[in-house]
Amino acid sequence: MNQYYLLAQLPSFSVEDVHGNLPITEEYFFDLCTRFLDKKSMKILSELSLEPPKTYKSTGSVFVDEWYKKERSLRFALAQIRALKLNKKYELDENSFSPDIVQVARTATGMESPLSAELFLNKYRLDLIESIRPNDSFSVDSVFEYALKLKLAQRMRKFDVETGMASYKKIYEKILGDNK
Image (cartoon, rainbow, N blue to C red; front, top):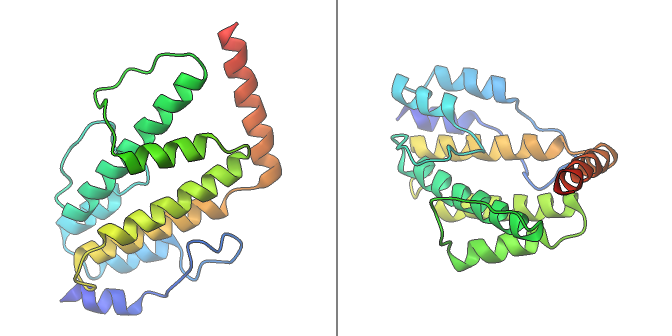
């Protein structure tokens, strides 16, 4: 029941509007959650990340576990495709991916602009969160959904075209230098 009061206080925002200011900070959100959530839920929330652990470990939340499973598959598929493009081996335990994950990874790695690829992946991740969202809009999993969207929105607002392109070129040159 406490989640109802928590979620009712949270402002809405657009994850896709990468230039607008967010109406809430992650710190304020976390502080607000401490007033309404139990210790177990706060532990899950404090460990919640856009980057899942490499190996499966149950978090105690069906929603978060599903997010991690799908995001882990996407990251492995991206890594495998990028390694193939560079004629490098990338060993992993998970050898098969769903067709939609493979298509998303291929599309993203085929884009010329790293920013375009990130925006594309951001949209996919947002759609993924929406597709696995809990049926109960006032459950603790809905709090986790809000937290993931907030993390995703904050991450996308940090991108800068010029800084990103310079970093991309530096990393790419290093990779090519390592292959010689």
